[in-house]
Length: 218
Image (cartoon, rainbow, N blue to C red; front, side, top):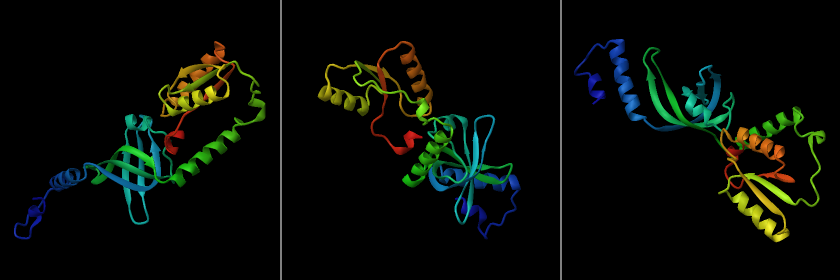
């Protein structure tokens, strides 16, 4: 047992490396998967794509690293002040005599934090002028063909088709399959819209998604 190696009956002098190796064995073996909630601080994205940060609460801090592959799949950009839940494994960094959590997944903690981030994103877009009336085109009063940019297996498409059958069954629908959530969705949606406009595939386009979590909107 780990504690037996430190018993008063068997005193022993450890090297720094030897003691750290024992701590590493005990810590990493006991906390292979753990979820920690805390506020992000000192967030440092690196040129390699890894993200280093600290999780903190009122009484302690914990170093954390999110490696490039996991960071790419996030639906939001980690930043100082965000309250998050990080799931991963504890790891001892022997050269510094410190421990950290190697994060497998990272999510915003609480709907309030999600709504706050969404509102900040909307304000940013407004400052950039993306909601200006000058950018908007009038919708056709009686479109003959509607293009739908969405997941072909999602609830949004089913809802749109049901409303079309109920309101005007003569309107044609062109389904343009596309992921509508996840890190790559934005670029894919933009590419589909450009292609639909270039080929004049429909009189009007609907970009839609159904259900899902608030975090998927980020």
